[in-house]
Image 1: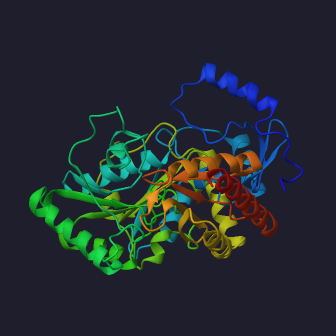
Image 2: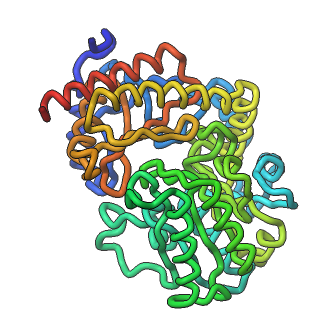
Image 3: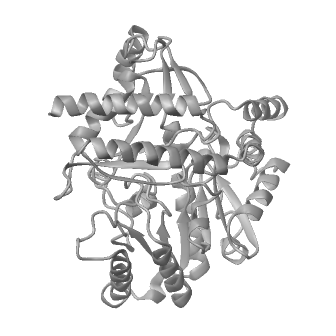
Length: 446
């Protein structure tokens, strides 16, 4: 049964705003649901019609500590009362330095580190590539299929999926190369995970013979768990293999932790699951609980390679965003949210595996911590993607009061990123709404 707080989806006020949006805003900026936010707290979003929606999207993994956490709101209010922005590159301030110090301490890697700040995940990736190129004196950058690294020129060049991200926006940045990334669910049936890893690492070595000399490659960038790609996780063996290649050839290993960072996977950073550290890590999304901020943390000698004035931005590392991020780090530690992420993930995988037993359309259930997904297929044996079913379930979910997201190269994956502060009762209610939505779509399909 739909909870009593759900009235009409979308309601009249959302419909009015949607009509205005269509007149005033280009169609390019996409939205999942035509529901317009009035307020948000914890894991609940209230729309302008009073509907309360359980949030399993968290702003695409941006609200790990929940919407409007009191500690973050207080930090923002105090900072805006003192100073909103002076530009760090004109007259610096302590918050930027303090946050850099904390990230240097907690980012994986047993070496001296430095951190710089910009505004978005794409900017972090752009700057990470600039730093790697400057530090190595090389230009080539290798990324992987299904990877998503942003929508600016270099980050979009490294991104894999053509539609909707890249179509019509070329030409892209030169000297970028792309190779397969492990997907054990879709690997040939005769191949073991170890054989998949070994084959891809072999292809990288072959690339160094056929396409680009390793001495010309500045960086290899990877997501420890592919986000837009459908929550695809490699093995520790594969990530360690990439680390070994980087060490062998003097290549910078860049870990894109923009979606995986800050407790989402059950550890502060997803790279901690693999037993190796990257030379450079990019962070954003949940770093500041919704304030625009991203970070690039890396080895001191790499980070100091660019000359004075070669890195930065007018709004980069604003005092308000830094204050929010410092509060986020306190909340993550004090509320033990990495532990909570593991508990949420275990419960979600358990519930989704039960749904997999009931519905043939659920071909795979996978996750790392509270970063969980289901992959939908038309036929389990052939594993033919079912993007239309995924789209219908996403729509049915928000109509029933649950916000979820699709993902995957074939848009047939539904991903779940609930705030880590979600209560057990809300988590269970959200899972019930998901089951209801899948049941309704399966009834239509059947």
